[in-house]
Image 1 (cartoon, helix red, strand yellow):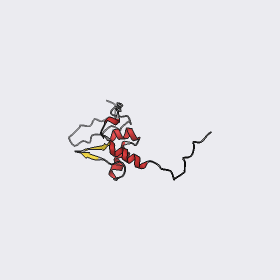
Image 2: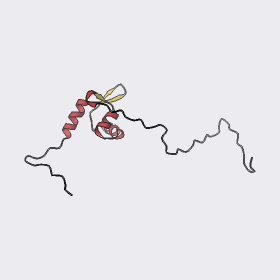
Image 3: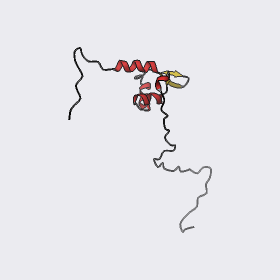
Image 4: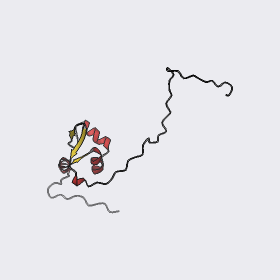
Length: 108
């Protein structure tokens, strides 16, 4: 033992120091298996995230604020009906004034 080094006895009241996180993930990110969403009647939050491009956190926040996609609860699980999703997205579709046409894409 080096000079000046002390050994401390661990007692039941000693504070245990936790290691500082290094920023690495504890678990490997799970790969999504491609599925045919048209065959599904009820979608999970992850399925809806894959379908729309919204993050899971955004969908959870929208649900908490009572905005966004209509959902149902099955026990403690949140599910989205494919029919409701289709209707909601159809209602968001942009419409043009009578006789107006969308602008052509920019040419560079």
